[in-house]
Length: 302
Image 1: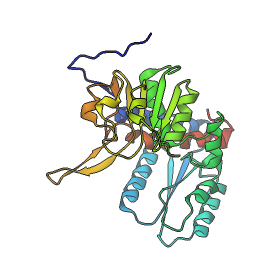
Image 2: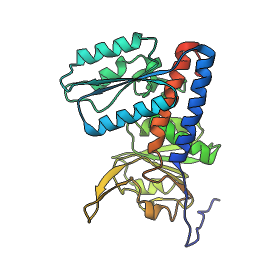
Image 3: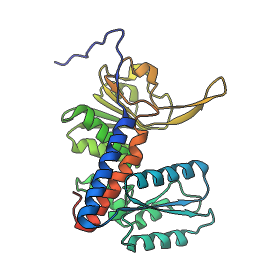
């Protein structure tokens, strides 16, 4: 019969340093890109499409371009006006699908009103769908076939494997069932041999379910949702959420879906916000772009 581990009153969880892990991963990708180019004479190319002029998206897209160049890849930026029609956007994607210098295509979401994100995403050739959001790649993930996996869930998985190694038999609870994070991460954890529960808006007692988790992943966008008493002592906590909140003094700071100051007293390991999952997303985009280039050039992911 298992017992719940007890923790000392001065217990502090180990921090999972996503920033350091992402830095190391990007350096490894840079070496792999150099080796790939040396063998095949091909430099992986990533095309990023941004429709409209959302300032936050512009900053994020430019950061992607900087990281792409740093990894030794080519970056192709397509900044389209808010007035771009769906037909114009689909025509651009089709040109990029056929361009041999482009190995990965990413359309920055959300799209302006009037553009069908599902139709646009599915227009990307599956082998170039480095966001992993197209229905072909989603279906391959669901039935256990290799494909391109959404970047944030992939980043979470890499952090967990680095921390825990073999996860077979562990109970993983994923709070949040979005197509972007929750669902694909649940499938990735199933493939690792975890017993997986997914909580969502209709779950009756999310806190009770969370308390059973050896691995607790929270991806809801609801800041401060998970409190100390939701966490099993010694659990590994991955906080995917990130929200900017205004403090009483008028300043702002980034917080996660987990109340960090409470959770750190109970969890065994925990990702901070910022500096946890966030840096892994762009690193995994680069990883997916290299994987896509390998698939397109050699027919194999490795």
